[in-house]
Image (cartoon, rainbow, N blue to C red):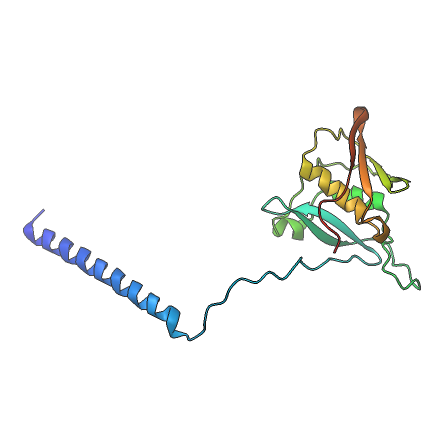
Length: 188
């Protein structure tokens, strides 16, 4: 390397450092130059409630952070008219069958997933005994993750407005049973 090459390299380093310093000073000045004062973070409460009305299904999938996320899907059934209340006319068993098929194209594009095993067999509506809903599934349920169980529990509990406070027990193949639990996602 010649002396001329060494001088060129030193100049480039010096001019690069000067440019970086100048850019930092300019950016720091821009933050105050807008005249818009900073604000504190304000808590505003729970997120908006997703409400499924007549003919829609409310399914629970998992987002990138591993949180349960409610998703509305159109159902094949027509809404009940004349009652004045939002009614879910999609049977709970049908909603569970759809949930076990996994996310659709738009849900996958939104990075939603499921922790449930894929199953194509239909699921029956839960059996109701007081405030307990018992769901029978076509696979062992004791090996499911907590999130997978919550996907089922929340989909069942929010299938109808009257069931949001219900406890849901899961029964699977091989007499596997998961004790009754409530949906960890509050109905707002």
